[in-house]
Amino acid sequence: MSSRLRLRRYRSRRDAARSVVRSLPRGASFLPFQRSVRWGRGFAWLAVVVGVVVLQTSVVGRLQIWGVSPDLVMMVVAYAAFRLRDNGVILLGFLGGLLLDASGTSVMGLLAFAMTLVAWGASQTREQGGRGVLVNALRILLLTLAGVTVHTVISIAFGEWSLAIWETMRRMALIPVLNFALAVVLFPLSSRLWVPSLK
Amino acid sequence: MYEFRSRGRTLALSVLLVASLLLATLEVRADSWGVLRVGLGSWLVPLQRMAVEVFDPLVATVEGLAGIASLRSENAALRAELAETQAEMAAVEDQLARLDSLERLVDLDLPDVEQTRTLANVVGRQVGFEFHLRIDKGLEEGVVPGNPVLDENGYLLGRVGASTEDFATVIPLSADVEGLTVLVAGSVGVLRPQVGSELLSLEVVDSPPIVAEGEDVVTSQLSVSFPPGLPVGSLVGEAQVVGSVLRGTVKPFSDPQRARAVLVVSWPPGPSE
Image (tube, rainbow over the protein chains, first blue to last red):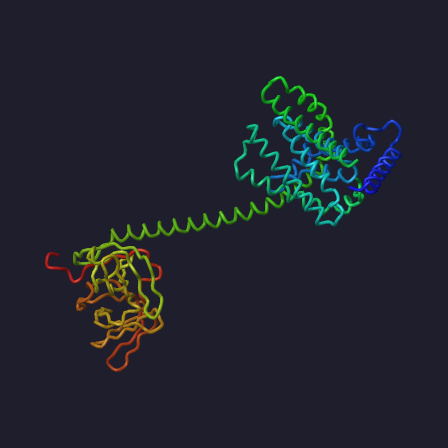
């Protein structure tokens, strides 16, 4: 590597680091990531997740279509990825899953595990969320499918899954479809959350 | 900078996944670990109660709408079930009617001669150029071609046309091309079917009697195919005398369309009878 190229790369990294540090509010650095933590926005999303968990466990669970309900918490986590950075989304997914675990009777931590992975997937696919209604709905469908599958597998691993195989397959097939339909309906609202190039 | 972010994201993801598994393991292995669930759950309960209070009317409305849909489908299912039950009832009624016919056939008193009787169920009807009935008794039960067949009231229905080991066909009077020798008002005549009609044509050649409408027609002692005295039908309308021939129309007493069970009589009786 030539010295000129090395110098150019160093300068670009330096400038990028300076721009990040310059954009930080006072006292908001979060080492070692050197990224600003937007606590207000994070807590707002956490409040939304708490509200959705409450709705999911008290209201939405009663509105069943073909015996299953849409998973609103997964959708909120997927939408939160539009505005929160990676670690915030992952933490939000973990907390949402933990709250769902606490409000149910299954083993604590299983839904948290699945939701953390869903949140990570949502953060990785946030750019696709703004590419149109079908792409976003497909993103939601795949994230939900992954979440339900992971939860099913880990529940079986922890000996908590007591449903019959066809019931399991039905849940794994229908919940993503319901979330897909809901994502199509909610796209006019969710598209307002999406901002390009959050990184 | 990007590496830092990537590492941080991986680190956070790993920590949270491990924490989740740790929580699950501790809950499974340590019974007292449920305090976290109780704490979080008790904190959520008031919020859930409030949500139920607020959204209950909405949920009730949606459940009501869904209930209407389910009621419709349930109604359709009940209608199908009702139709099935009605079909079963009709089948049972048919069986009861058949049983009643068989009981009446068993108790039937035939005039004069003791014949071998065979009860048979009507198991089919052939509607085509030649109408006939199919019964479930055949040669094995002694049903042979030419045997007279009576209905549940003892009225002459027809004769056995063909017989196999297991079943036989019955040719009703209205479809039998062979004439039937009958007795009407003391005179012997011949009954023949009319094409396309349930009625029979009567011809009395020898000394035409004076007959009135409703005069009964029975089988004659001159008949070789049927026992004498079996009721066949009654005269319909006024009979006409043309030359030395009395011509009239007879309506058979029996209705082959309604027959469920029949009595096959062996005729002429064998030497042992």
